[in-house]
Amino acid sequence: MQLKKLTIYYEDSKQSCQMLAEEFGKYENVECKKASDYEEQRIIFTDKEKIGLIFESENGKVPDSISNVIQKIVADKEETHMICVTGGRKEFKALHSAKTDMEQRGLKVQNIYTKYLFQKHKVKMETAAGQIISDLEAKKENLFPKETYQDHSKKELRKYLRRELREYGKYSRKQRASKRGKIYASEYEDDHCRYLSGDGKAQGDRQNYSKRDY
Image: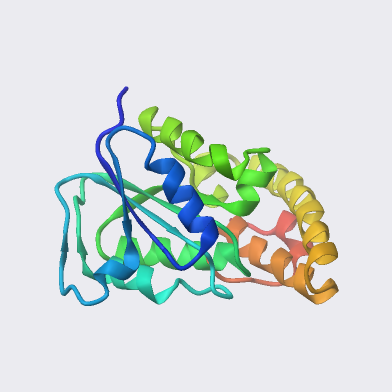
């Protein structure tokens, strides 16, 4: 199925966002716009297309330029939309915040992506746009595990969470080695607990997540 028109608003001050937007721009029916161009605009009108947001997390917060787009955009509430976080500290917290803000505007977000998820599935940033386009064309949802597994048993969900936490542990150790040491890695793992629960809150330590009722 050919992709319906997709308009992407990206954080143009970050190189990772610029690079991904450039890759998206190579696809038919995709238009990429700098979020900073809309800082002074009171209302952002769209024409029943899918909306995509690309940004880096600012220590768990959504950049002002992207928040501005979310608050001012008038988009199709029957359509589903996409968010991609290309890195930064506490990327899942920022992702959850942006998704919540979109949904408070009545906009459904059915496809979410982060740098960690790309690395987990061995998707390079230069091919990430193609993967996302393929998901959108196939109407393949990519949601928080709590949403994905809501119709499964608690046993199945716990099994998935244990496996996912092991994988994220490997990722966080690499972050610890390349960034700021043990504290930084711990923050990443706590952030991932928010991602697993899908509620944006770190409830208890990460060891208890495999036993928690969701």
